[in-house]
Length: 114
Image (cartoon, rainbow, N blue to C red; front, side, top):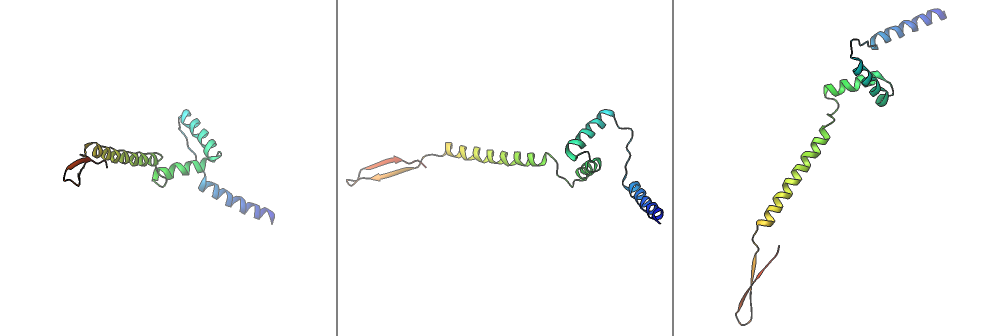
C-alpha cells in the first residue's frame, strides 16, 4: 500500500516539476554570472521569482525604475519655471506711488514696495 501512495505522490511531483521547471541554454557566460549574482542578492537565489520579476517588468506590471525619478524631475522643472516667472514679474513690475496731501494742500509722492 505504501508503495502505491509513494508512487502516486512521486508521479504528482514529477508532473508539477515538469510544469514549473524551466531550462535555459545558450546564454552568454557573463550574462549568466550577472543574473545569478542578481538572483542571489535580490531574490535569495530564487531564480523563479527573479524570472517572474523580469517578466512582470517587461509586461508593464511593475513600473519603470526611472519613472519615479522622471516624474520628480518634471515636478522640479515646473516649480523652477514658476519661480523664474515670479522673479521676472517682481523685477519688471513698476513700483506703485502713493500721493499724500498735506493739510496745506502740498502733495507728496511716496514709492510703495509690494
